[in-house]
Length: 85
Length: 195
Image (cartoon, rainbow over all chains, first blue to last red; front, side, top):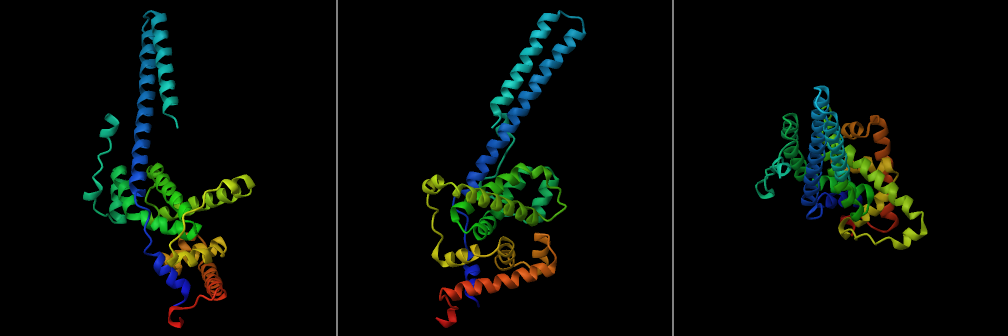
């Protein structure tokens, strides 16, 4: 057997550093939660905007609806930005 | 809080190793988190070893393994099962290694970075010669020889994984074997039976 083949045999026993799996899983969980929060914030914002648009279309007072729409969108954008890495 | 409820992970102690086909079934069933955890436990050592052989640097290999696994996580939804799971993981790992090696090479061009660079942790001596010898090979030869000897893949599998013809793999392996044998011979490192 060539020395390099022996080297490969020994390398086959090498193990990933302890804690790698835990670190990766923790990072993935965090990533999952961030994505969930971002999606929720966006949906909330869109829902507020949608409600406001419906109110305007339904002939209700324009100003409160417009304020609600702008607030909804602003909240949504701020939440998405805050959650963006 | 709701987000936390989305991911019910079994504790690592109760975790059972899963086969590739079981992992693919989980993916098809949309149980992405479970599939990912299974991948981490099933492949972490293999990914690290591949990265170690590719980069020759334990510190860089750890970074590459971590980034590979996280990249797999971010792209779990895009894996359709058209290729084998191992092939997909290998491709991601290889690309991460190449990117990190390129980044390291670029950084080293700046003298300030060379001075600031922290020393990499030393590889255990039982395979440090091999890691050094592998670094003397061209990247495709190193990849081919690693898949063939470390992963114990057939010529056909190496050809499929690397996306090159069978003849090319045989040529690379022939050259790599010779170069590695020469590297060890030049340094007076002989076969065990001859010591």
